[in-house]
Length: 435
Image 1: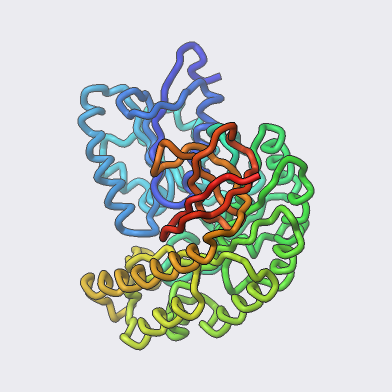
Image 2: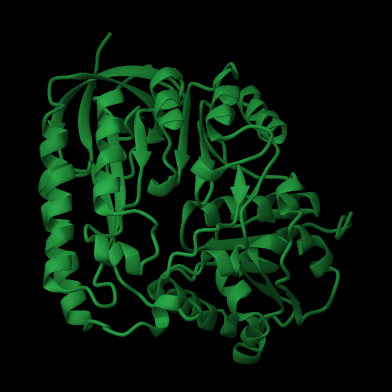
């Protein structure tokens, strides 16, 4: 085993989405087999990995800023190895080595499995090749102890939304065999995990020996897993079969993240989303008819190229009309290599900021209203641990993915607990345990 004669330490910093977080868990799993242990401080590491995201310019700027700060550490310790992974690595490849000479390794999300081999070389290794076999690889995963785990069910994307870099950095869609996923989830159940979230750029288009509804049915049969979640669903592929599965499968939670992006059908066409706002609205109605208490969250892009005042108002109307439980909203950030990067009609940052602020202000009122409606109700939560906002409280989530903070004794992590909601906030609830 590589470096088995001495203990090595690795520091991994992750930018971007949950898929990147899970990729970092895979890197940690590979490195643990090579004799490495994780460290929380880069100063204590022999290897530093930046797992990057290029979906938004802000994340890319933050990465390069942190990479620059490591330069002085590398000067003091020339034997320190630095790796850049993720989507920026895939997109920029060897250009990173030219731009930042103190980097030793560059590898994309489809080449994580090559990490061990790369460490056997001195430096200047670039691995950004397309890997069609990635879905067949069951890589080791190092997860922190807890009750919630993330499981990749597929890789890549075929949608080519005009603003999105993912199909170019993560490749085309490839689904893992359902039996491999089943074994991984069953193993998680035997290790005490109670909730799994299935990950894919578009989980609705999962296709192996079964479709996505079939996969949910398989995982729903695993004893010990109490809750099943999934992200992300593409509205274009949201089927009636999936809606029925969400309604009928007892372990599948009543929450769906369904990115809208814009309330304007004209802008949706420019984004190459494959649906109109009316299409989206009808699917939301079918979800609510089948599962009346379902929680629906979404993504919104403010200030896409060519977005007129009317287009923007269509988004405002959509937010007010659908009344999402929560949204992730961002200013449009053109990414090099996408079709949208060359579109005309770029809006000023000031206009994009104003529009984003108004969208978030409206959604905050809606989120509070929907949370306030839960006051006095009794909700089942899965206890996750100590609250991030109040160390004197514990925290958990409802089946509809709402955070509940509470005080309690004789309560343990992983326990299912009933709480009465006694107070509502914009992004969380306060509860009191009940029998």
